[in-house]
Image 1 (cartoon, rainbow, N blue to C red):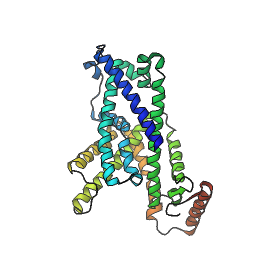
Image 2: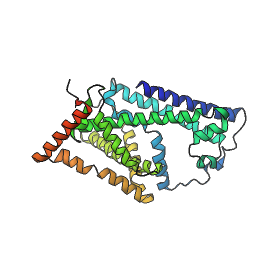
Image 3: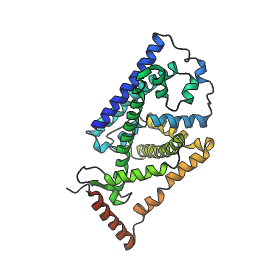
Length: 315
């Protein structure tokens, strides 16, 4: 976690530097020519385009969801989880908004559209010989985002396997480091499959569709439980209007891509449905043949020896 904290502070400092430069350009140099109505020129407001824009935008704020995957790692999660989300989201939103305003103060709309890395172009325009600071900060930010994603997603597979939804060996931890090594390797293999497509925005659309679908189902299930089981103990509870709005937005994000980008939506749906055979095999298939059980046991024993792992409950 110390590494993650260091990377986070490096990212925040870089964003604050960008915001400060943008503020200086606007306040002291009067550079506001790009902050005009032409800022929105060429914008498409069709529902499908707005939905896909949400996908890319939500990808930038996906960190809020990581906390939900690592509640076991938190101290007093019923108190700290809501605080972590409530405090971090407004701060991140404000910082990102001001950073984007700084970009538009310094760069033209065409420069932003054509730039492969907007922050790097911004640094080259404003920092002169110190422009190298921005690429380094972007690299650290990328590494921090990757580290957080790996940390959270590996715990998702780890807990899923512990609940019997994936093969048992994925739920084991390394004896020396107490990390879910099989889950990390499984996540790495899945990530390599995604590298078959080099268009990052298409990959974002694939994964964002799947995430929106599962969020819609999860929030819908929570609303159903609030209706059917109103007296259940709920350590974390919010006003009902929030999940209702969230549920409606999730429906919007799931349905509209089928009209605007049907191929990407269908691929995202196929990726989601590809988990059904695994779920059927591990959960619903009760009377598994002896040959299948022996194969899983042999694979589990082999992975335990190779990765030096044991079940979590073992000492």
